[in-house]
Image (cartoon, rainbow, N blue to C red; front, side, top):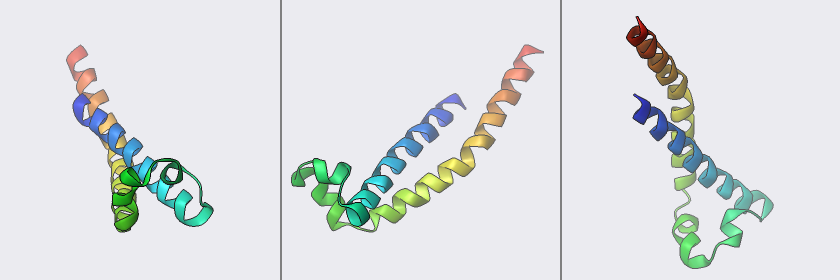
Length: 81
């Protein structure tokens, strides 16, 4: 369960970074995609649908994380007894 919690945390960080990079590029013309070279960001800028995948992953991970946290606490409480 703790591994799942770490995976959810990594998914939140990665998807938030990608989504905010898209927002920065399309609306404000600054951010991660403007500072990295085109050879790295070309994949992301040519596949605009990835921003919606990142947003969906972010929302799903944010919804799931509290349930996993409660399950971890419940399991730890059962081990103490």
